[in-house]
Length: 93
Image (cartoon, rainbow, N blue to C red):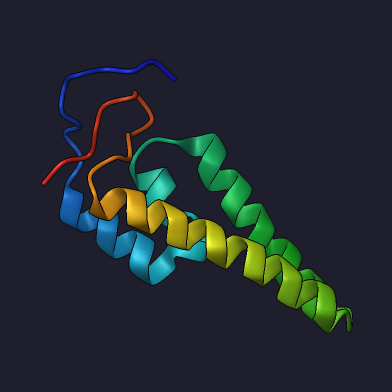
């Protein structure tokens, strides 16, 4: 990812809302064009569901905790306008 001083054309409000509502699914990363990060978040969610359905509630909770903490960090960086889109452009109000 390259750093850019050019402002992201993606909506700050949409990015924050997607992160707040669907954060553990990684939908906000897909919206911002950061596909690999979005796939990693989605994979963690799918792994959590698989652990839960297979009876490994402890591992499911741990996976959800990791994904949830990661989402909180990304949400914080979005709120303080320090997160960048997939092209390295800052997501600003």
